[in-house]
Image 1 (cartoon, rainbow, N blue to C red):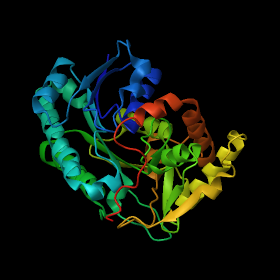
Image 2 (image 1 turned 45 degrees about the horizontal axis):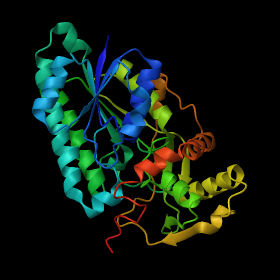
Image 3 (image 1 turned 90 degrees about the horizontal axis):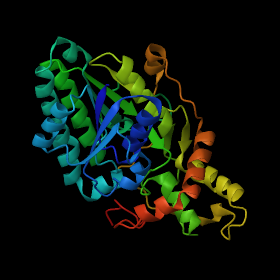
Image 4 (image 1 turned 135 degrees about the vertical axis):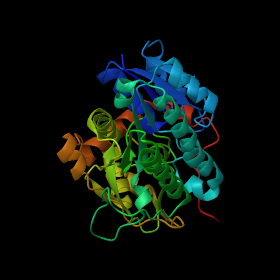
Length: 352
């Protein structure tokens, strides 16, 4: 049985990927997560008792632990989701982003290199290290064009800079040591289990309470939205058939302004909650001071992933958003429990 070490597998994208592996493959998952504020064991509740899922609480910076997991479970691949990931938090406290996203990735890479070097020929040939990254490493686009795998890096936030540094380490471990690595750079994800500091779940949960719905600046910043289930299928496809040393852009082909996202959500809320006292929900919108260094537009050209590996997104934005909203409406217990910590939906990263 193939064994995969998934780091950050109690977070948003990582947990969705773990659920995907459990449902769609027969691999064994070793799930390493330090359970920081965005990691949540409730997200993995349906996997309790699953013999193919082993959860380990720990940090990718713990070299002894990582080495032990790689050896004890004879790992065939590492998929690294472990990261501090919210731009606003990186503005307020960049040190944690440097520690996890750069130093942590270095530790994980170096442990993987040591483990890989000790494998036999067939084990070496089959091993993969997949770095899950972001389109934010490329900086900001103008009104036209898309990021490709050859776009120059130009990060504009501490978060983006830390992910860019990690990507460069991954590349260096391939070219210097021969470690068979893969990198994916994705556009904005949305879907079930997302921590409610991000735009879509934040708007949903605030709307349910009748609170103001914050829109940064004039709401014209554009993102390419990718349903998390489509992202998980892309990562698996890259892990299966991607060429070592290569980078693959994963985009949803669904560019929307932030204002369009909020307006679409408000319309869906009006439709799905006809008895809500807050209808029409768009009257809850409020425009707030923009984020410092807020990139104007992101968009990913996923042609390489489509043409070489045959991946296509299954959800368009409206269908994926409806599925997402329905999930949050049906999982209010999860929402309440994830909000029981220190975060209460307040503004982060304003430098005010």
